[in-house]
Length: 463
Image (cartoon, rainbow, N blue to C red; front, side, top):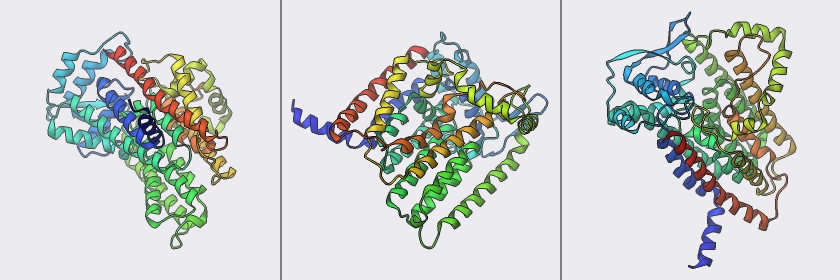
């Protein structure tokens, strides 16, 4: 064996984390798309129903029973049969996939004329852009193999393709923290969202591109007209994906005024984006109001808002104590990765290994002299503000008025704001080049090993 050629190939590979990411994420992402049975990612049935509704050209759902809190749409009954036939595995760790039944569903077409009322009140008011790739995948599947199972896989594939391409581009553009983003993007929690029908995959894709584009412009201190329109599009698309995450668009304020093209100055750009973004958000809120219901019998958005205005310290205390209400190892695993409906767990040492790799990835970036302290603090502030807005929205919509505890937080809710954390802290402390090369090699070799262990856990859970 020519060890010199092998070593040269390894050096070339670790010099290009974006290319390496494409291969590793591509292989393991496709495995997760097809190994996880339909409906077995958390909340996947309601995401699937929302995406199917959009694939038929209906943007806004409807309320069927306001008193019973039933909102959704009239969908083919074959979709609900799929959910029913595989529902026995949800929260049932000992229940395995019935492969003959799965095969039967794969080749059984859905009769679009036989319809029933389907409830998906937790996703019915989500903006349509969060489900555009999934809806396209379902639309194509309806033309080629119109079974419910094929539609789920097609929606997952479309979601994954968008996320994979966006993360690849982000890794190419990002001037600092490439290896940290490489590790973070391959966290099981990230791959789970990317390979399900969840609305989070397109959101994570847009956030990664927005952060990378913004940092790319800050480093070069100049922006072309084309880049300006790309930046505006990312900000506006994000505003129409999920309400709290529109705040992530505030990172563009970190771009120096001198970087903007002479014919479109910073103030004008920010004013236009702000006006259009707010208009879009208000417009969607008005459009979707007809489909809104309270999510649970004990929730009341107006009462909760009234309570917050009069006793905000109760919420503040609940938010501060939320990360400490469970065991520390559970909190860490929630962010690193819990697959299925929260019932595919990994050993604690694997979680710690993942965080170790993330920490090492932060140390192998070059010194980022272009990132001033105020820019880093702004990125951290926007990340914290978005996280707080996410917690506030959960408190308002999912908890009874005046609740003293916040027990509905999942790690996946904070993946998007965490992307800003990477460039904010990268390049402050760095390793010498020789040590950095060894660390990059360690990360490159460790990641597929870890994901192989995760894949084995998925197989053991479902088969």
